[in-house]
Length: 182
Length: 182
DNA sequence: CTGATTTATGACACTCAGTGCCAGAATGTG
DNA sequence: CACATTCTGGCACTGAGTGTCATAAATCAG
Image 1 (cartoon, rainbow over the protein chains, first blue to last red):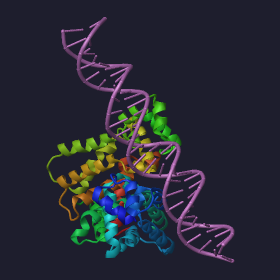
Image 2: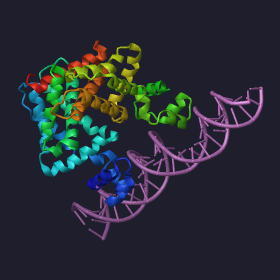
Image 3: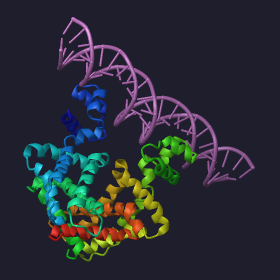
Image 4: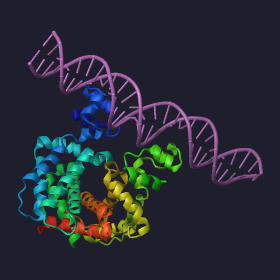
């Protein structure tokens, strides 16, 4: 059902497609559609909340041993991004991500904020104390991770890069930017 | 007029306040309000587009000399963030930014995407060629810059930090995360 | 100052997302 | 079969956002 909507969005764009059209295409009433997907954006984010759950689960099983921030980033982002190595899941996820990157309304979705909150918890709990507070570090890391993933969905995947490759490249370049060398 | 709306939003939250209430508070008809501010979010983003314009202007006057990515980041972000040193402008801007950070709808606003597009142009035109494409680098940098600015508006300003300090701290920490040391 | 033109405002009616409410269909359980 | 639960659809509503049109207000020419 959300796949039918996805096809419509890809063909006509996110905003132009109305919930009535989706309901009709899915053979269900408008009211039922809204019951299954409380908002239009939920049709696109469908299934991506599992990423948040995976990160949360990681947070609960992570050993107490101290690690560098670098190690933590790798460990945390590997969870969602490795799912994208599964061609089955990756294909639909990429289409979803591409759509998300194209629409302000989709970019503001709650799932993204939940993900950020989870990672903030992780950083605060498992990373070494750092000068800027965990909240700021986490926001920056999520921002880099998400934007590199969007880039991967849009351009990177077609040139044989993995999503994790894209993240590492983005982090490295940002690192160079702030350290001195261009 | 957007200040009246700002006060209402701060008191009751962004979503609960209706355009009718704002129109009434501003002593203007609902239709006129929509003519002045095409969307509810525009009431909050009011004035912040000047940041995009400032970056665009910088792009047109920037010398052709090659610079490191680090130098470029400093040069570009100094433009909007130095405006925040003016206590007059900063106070309202901070209130706007705090509101923006609290609402998904506000986080998806077009102005943020315009800013990203401008910076992408700058990076592509003036930074040394880098392994990940300019688009990805720019997205990551804008993400770090924006999230650190949001953090500054929420928590940082009260502890005597400048917005530019917050950005530098965020960049440095992200750098350490990707380079090896925690 | 007056008349004409342009521009800003307000009223009305509309579309679309999203929600509450309720009646009836489907499904499951003894 | 009778009963309770859950699923579905229909209806009516609020709120954001838009098009249209008439009129008020500001602007300008003479």
